Length: 281
Image (cartoon, rainbow, N blue to C red; front, side):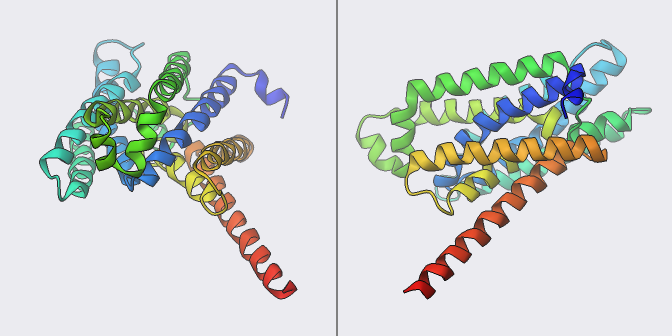
């Protein structure tokens, strides 16, 4: 494994993945607690038309242009739109998810279909992730997104905690919920965009939810759920990274499968421990 890390692209992919593995579950815990986990799915899919436009710009105008920047722009715009839709459909907030998800995929497919001779390999790598597809700018994007999330948590942790468990009480307590929600969806969009190169558009939201689902199986407090979700995410990234490199598999798929296997393993261990303690009585 040591000789693998000597390659620059591999180092960048692993480092970017480890950064995303820290911040994605931190956001994911709040999404799951607020029953908004599918929101990340909608935002992730909206990046597809942005990536498509970025690939067009790269192909026709600037060969060195990074399409992820366009994907991030679309994700940020979608975050603002999502927050607007949640207030527009106050009693049917979940309708915002299929609107964004289906609209984003449809626009992305239309844009891709209209461009001739577009590199299929590039599209596949953005959809499913690639070890060799992580550039220096992708790594810097992951670092910036990670710092933005950590700063956001340091500045608004108490407010975000209050909103996550009782938004109406938070409003009555003087918390500026609309501002916090908008900032929260903004950093979610940043993390999703920064993880596209490693995990891929179709799978990136799973990194925000599956490690959280695993930690919730046995965590006894909100703080435990936070740090345990990060641990499970990092283990999944390391396992998926190793499998993707040695078996030439899609990086995003191996990471998500590793995370799913961890969930299954923790569930089986918990079930066995409960069964054992019941018999001991």
